[in-house]
Image (cartoon, rainbow, N blue to C red; front, side, top):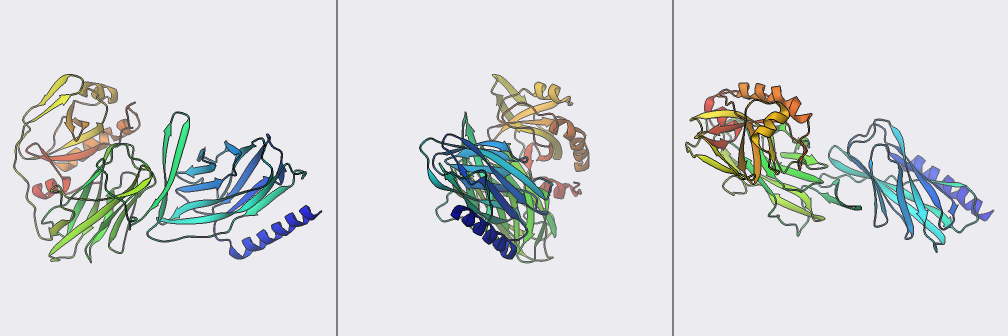
Length: 448
């Protein structure tokens, strides 16, 4: 009788709490009021998300002696490790309300009241928000029947420009380790750069009032959450060009790219277009790339090709293109030496199909994707594959890129990483240069 009265009181209190404090998102938890050792019961969670979309994570801590296995995940990924249950969605289901369930096994020797609580985290406008799921209590070795305890969590919402949530998951064999980390514009004290990571920024030294900033990121096998923040001078504005699967925003003179999970390829490029006030003089751009490595938050201050941590420009007209003319010789790891002839003079464009850590011959890639002649080079430890035709007009190269894009992206080559969309690269006398520099030198227009 007393137990029933307590359950009724808890239910009424929770309903009143939800009425006064719940926001747009609610999470309702249901578990049995009692269970016996060496038996199994189900935890059911109903998430009412409204119109919220994008990345989300539901996490619950289980008592010692409880183990969990997946039941219904609503399109998310499920893990259980170190007494922690996690459901992760790269993109929340379309339904405004959905349910997830998992089975819990109670070990022998467990007794007494045991509590299960948790938190639902999600991202709105690149900001972390969270909803606390109020604890539910189950009595082990109790005599209660099948009464279900229903709890709706405390809707505690955390907002802030300096915090975003993400998960970095590494799986080896049958053991899955999941580390949850947060990082923001201001990375925590004690983080340091890693030798496995680099971010190189390029921008024209004397651009017109509109120009492109390009960043080449080399991340190796790093994955999980990451964030790039670029600081622009006062009066400058920015818009996204290439985001490599991340989300873009611009506010308070900060360009932000955020990845819930970094691209699979070891090397990728991002770019954005800048509009500057006329005659704004000499100005500098700085930026920091924050990421997760070995369960630690690290940061890397992006540099220009010369290793300087700021890229300074003077808004004016025209830029200069180097006139070096090196021959390029690369070695195919398959014991085949590949010598690239002396490249043509002047500025030209090609379509890069992919960059792979694994060694594949140019003829194999050409045949696999049904492409015209493909050539292979090596750069920064990667095998890079380009269409052999070269173009003096950027638009012609862009059109060639579009002609092969679908076939490359939709047909995954079984290597260390999936194929990224092909893109246009630029050269001057055989030396690779930023596309924006090539466009300026040849007085051409950029096309999406």
